[in-house]
Length: 440
Ligand code: ATP
Ligand code: MG
Image 1: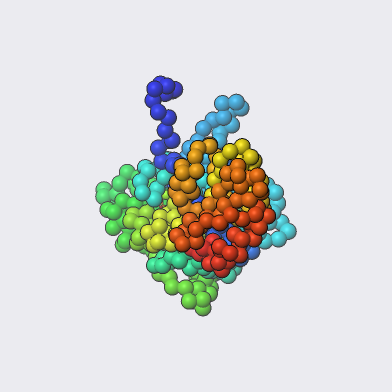
Image 2 (image 1 turned 90 degrees about the horizontal axis):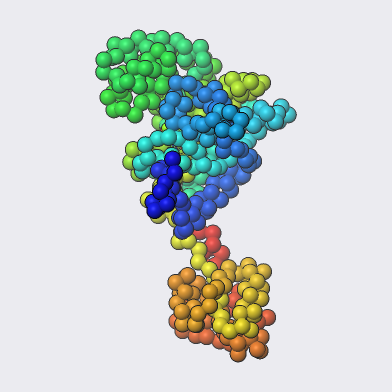
């Protein structure tokens, strides 16, 4: 259906433009997360945004919110292939690991970032295109890796200056343990069938564990008294869970065990975790993850233990903003104003020369008088204006003016002396470094 030409084109509901200066904060946040992941030896992997639809139905589970009602699926009109915009990153990452045999020789610690798509009701902290940064480890079965992922995220909150994040843990056990629990859970929930909502009633036989993840308060209340999966765990699962907790305690990480924590995707087993905050209203889960030892085999690969997490970038950004964790966006250091033909030519040369020495330079474009140009220099927040008229240009000189210190005035300097002067004379180098690297 095409829109009439008179109608303004808009972005798709729930899919947002990230504008400057917000996009600058995003870039810094991503850089901080990547630095943290790399400090733990994680390597980047870049994955397609579109995948074959059966990948998600097999990986995430047929009877889940995502597969039942949130996927953007379509048929490729050119060849009839069934495709889906990825709703999450783990399935695609596992697919790539299998396809390229990555886990065959060595263990893999991988990370990725980018947009995910889910057809949900847009609201604060919940969008149809949102962004995740995910980390996945393939080939390690012990509790040490689960704990490492959690320590990594704890370090990240510290790096970002975030406080008040609470960690919740649960164990989903192994398939046999879940089967025993499932039978008792169905029997319990059947007793409340009349009070369950439509979703829950439909899942009662097909996927009762998912009912524990319901967002409906009435269903949640019923679930509060349901049999706890933790009480069905065998010795091996309990030992794994205890192992994770021991490493966390040794590292001083506080956590709560939440027996209702089941996660919205079917592929998890054993340890699952979420980092939650009470500062974002209803959408309080910032980061979620866990172990999914069965997924690689389920997708046709050789059995490979795995675990990982994904964090929601929009929610993390909102949290940084709420906690004042964001430094002001970084303005240019020099605004280069010029008027006249010879001045214009010199301005290009000076701008390139300054950038060669690492000075962030905004070259005035679009003509106009000096008065208007100086207004733009102020508006851009530049520390200095470099001003070139044809008179200065004829003697290879420029005017240098500090815009932040009223008393410094303006001085005429030779072009080749300019970078040195800016670095030594006007910038306090330590202050500048702090300015550049403080906060996000
Ligand atoms: P929720 O219970 O909030 O729907 P989920 O269990 O569906 O979350 P995951 O699939 O585990 O979420 O995704 C990991 C993280 O991605 C979430 O903790 C959240 O921070 C973020 N996230 C998930 N869905 C959205 C969305 N629609 N909009 C924004 N962020 C999201
Ligand atoms: Mg969800």
